[in-house]
Image (tube, rainbow, N blue to C red):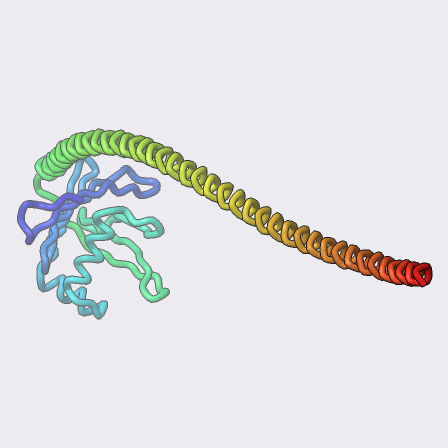
Amino acid sequence: MESSSTATARHTCLKLEIPSTDPLFVKGTWFDTHFHLSVTDGLRAWLCNATEEEVQERAAQWDQPVAEYIELAERYLGFQQPGSVYRFVDAGDDHKRLSWTFEREGTKLEWRWKFQPSYDSRKITAGILDFLMDANINLSEEVVRKTQSFEKLKLEAEKCLEQSERFTNEKMEFESEIYAKFLGVLNSKKAKLRELRDQLSKQEIAGKASVDEEESTDKTESNHSGSNAEESEEEAEKNNTSSSKDIPAGRDHGRKGATRKS
């Protein structure tokens, strides 16, 4: 479908393929309240000019607004709809009738419009061919523009991808460097903590050994004091025993001397 430069007219051209007949070209010019159709088989041409009054009458018969009626006709004559049955048959006096079917609320319906023969089939056919050529040129130009735009977008995407990969690599390098530094600091802190822990353990062991040594020394001194006291008591008892033995002996000796003297 090809739109004109004005907002009031739209143009379509359909290659209509109907079984058992040669292909037909249906050109449509669509307005808000009416439309014009021209059909050619390459040799002859037929015309249908649907006036505002005719369109209003047809729309009223189908209980449709005019805009909806024209939109539906443009859809079926702008593109061949799958499932729709198209016919282009004789209507007498060299007239033709174009019809197509569609479904509405589960019911299959048919629209028909009558065409009269053109007085200048060559001009109509040439006009349709010119329209197709212009549409083909415009389409080719659009394809070129889209292709160029796609290539540009593809190039930009490749640049973005390359930049993203570079950023990713830089990020990984930065994270690796930071992690290595952090790991070094962490290991240093761990080593320092282990050193302090070992020092504290040594201090605790040394303190415990000192306490044990002091307790052992106190016990030893107590034992020595007890032994010395016992020894002193034993010596005192021995001395007392010796003294008691010596005193009677002296007395006896004195007595013996007194006896002798008497």
